[in-house]
Length: 184
Image (spheres, one colour):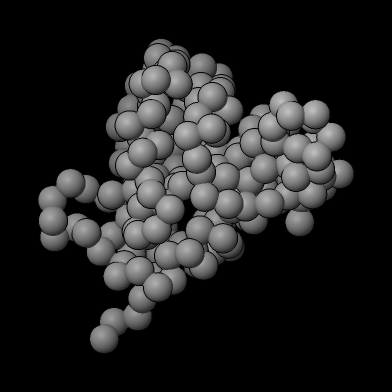
């Protein structure tokens, strides 16, 4: 459970979250190799991404917000602590029963249980969807992300070696798979 002294609510993402979501993602773009984007985004550039995750269906965006801070902020809105998504795995129709999932936490919320809370809500929301598998690519090394995914039943299925170059270094990406619906 979160240890931030906060009261956390997980809900579908909304356009009003766009600035905060963009700020969180841009932190990882600028400071880490956890995403292979190399140029920060503007909120306007991220809007199509946000809109590709409706409130229902297999492609979701869930956000964790600090409810207590929202009540105390005098209209400034809630503080977004992180988000989780399920997105199209590949664009071809035959891949429609597979999704790629990810979770990003604000720097101050990392390690506080927010990622676990978000993934629990995401997989619960996806339980009724026509999905067979979820996949996650994890830039290596990233022990905390590996532990998070293994906690949710993901298993390692292989590694793409030196598949991305960022910060003048080549990075490996380990791929993890989770069965969402058993074989018929």
